Image (cartoon, rainbow, N blue to C red):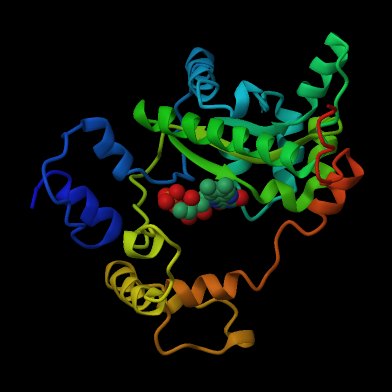
Length: 284
Ligand SMILES: Cc1cc2nc3c(=O)[nH]c(=O)nc-3n(C[C@H](O)[C@H](O)[C@H](O)COP(=O)(O)O)c2cc1C
């Protein structure tokens, strides 16, 4: 078994992944395997030229049909930024990060192209929404990897969708343009930590979807995670769920998911141009 990436894979998954056979050794891939979210930033400015470079990388991401349905709002104005940050007082990094970008799904521009070229179409379907979301998510992650490659740290911010009406007003979003996630960006103030991920046994299915082994795989993962970084003293809402003898990732996430997020987002999207209907069949 190859030793290449052994330490990085242990750091990410808490076990030996068992790569059979030789694989190319690459320094950038090592960084990807060790990547981590950063929420605290050094008091070191990020030059605008660097942000523009990262945005260029972001928009180099793949785009469905080359429709290019992602846009970014770069929040430079302090007043506007503070208004946005004030909506989320428990996430002070939204206001404190040296740079804050909002990656938006932009299903509007394609309709504008239709208007400009005299081929009017509607992009209000689930397909239109989904394609724009994916484009924005790919751009977000490409920006993140580019930033981390150059030693910056990032934190995506999807909580924006929990206050969609206020956020849309601050960003002056027109119909069919919606936030996928914000992105805090800056030089990290601390090393941060690598989140251990589920083993590929849980996330990769060969030839067909098969969840038969999930309970045992999750139990093992919970124990590995707990051994590295226990959260047993930070149990979520014990007054509601009780105090668990063993408190692992799966219990924590199951409890977290009991608090719905994004309430009102679907209604807001419907009020701002999306119907999520099936597309009309193409005229013959
Ligand atoms: C789409 C997306 C949205 C996120 N939204 C938030 C957020 O609103 N606030 C926050 O503090 N972190 C947010 N995060 C960061 C995650 O909590 C973080 O990625 C997760 O804890 C795993 O850490 P890692 O990225 O270092 O593996 C978000 C991450 C993603 C990918």
